[in-house]
Amino acid sequence: MKYNFDEIINRKNTDSQKWDMFNDPEDVIPMPVADMDFRCPTPILEALNNITEHGVFGYAIVPERLKEIFQERLKNLYNWETEKEWQVWIPGLVPAIYASCKAIGEAGDAVITAIPVYHPFHLAPAYIDKKLQTFPMKEADGRWTFDFEALEATITPATKLFMLCNPHNPGGTVFTKEELEKLVDICEKHDIVICADEIHADLILDPSKKHIPTASLSKKAAERTITLMAPSKTFNIAGLGCSVAIIPNPELRQKFERAKHGFFPPLTRYSQEAAFVAYSDCEDWRLALVDYLKENHDYLYEALNGYKGLKLLPLEATYLAWIDARETGIENIQEKFLEAGVRIMDGKIFKGKGFFRLNFACPKATLIEAVERIKKSLAE
Image 1 (cartoon, helix red, strand yellow):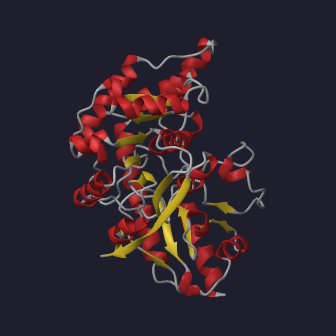
Image 2 (cartoon, helix red, strand yellow):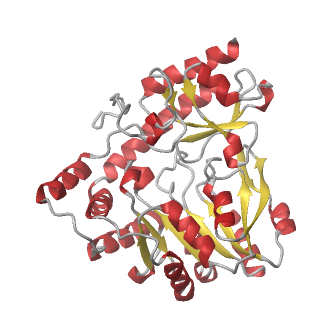
């Protein structure tokens, strides 16, 4: 193997949110937080070392070459023709979610999202004096998708923003062209802006699926969409803080800029250079990573789907398995597995009671050990 994703890297006592935040016993395998236990690509490490050796860490500006290579990437991977001025570079995707909620509508207006969903989606509105509206996703044909009837029934005149996660976290769905077009039509009908978190776009596990940026569908879609992307999940550089909003509509872009003004620090040279090198020199690493994640996914699906009441739909994307534990009858599944030496994330965090999320972006040996502990715990 050209890249050694099987390497076990000790992340304990590195101030890792995933490995150190919960103060678990040494032998617990942590699988909640969405970063990977793989060393990031060598070209990125070399680029960061070069900056360190230079020794000056002043304020940085986003270089034109980063904007250009990102623009080129959108065209090559997603057939999306964009303009450089649409890009707004930001030090993190979650702050961009909050900025989008702040930018669209007035105090007291509503933000709508499907649940379960990545928790900042349903936490952000309350922090900026907006109301949260939710509607349930549904299982259809072995995948999670939108219940469009429930969506239309939930929308009110106060609804100003739809928060979209595509590929979906935690459901793992890559929404189809038809699903996205229907969503855009509904949002146009009700004059709702779409904020599309597409941070997992580069991690498609099902080769029959293809990520489609919502804003690339049509001019009307582009005019009402704020798209959020980042190299962080793909290249395991989330801690460096580098993301980008792509906003074709100049009015929306101005509102977003105004919402973030004074709250976001500039990107660092480390984050910018890491992003540039990731996009310019690490595509073969990404493809090898996706192959490895697919192998982990297939092992996990085979081992746990249908085991002692667990149910797992095949993921189309991401490295975050969404597992239904309702049939086990266990009230606190997180505590149950923690006693067995595996920390997972309780689905209640995503408004998905009875489910749990498990991060399988780790060496295969680690995943096998975690699965064996989970199975033993359920067997008992």
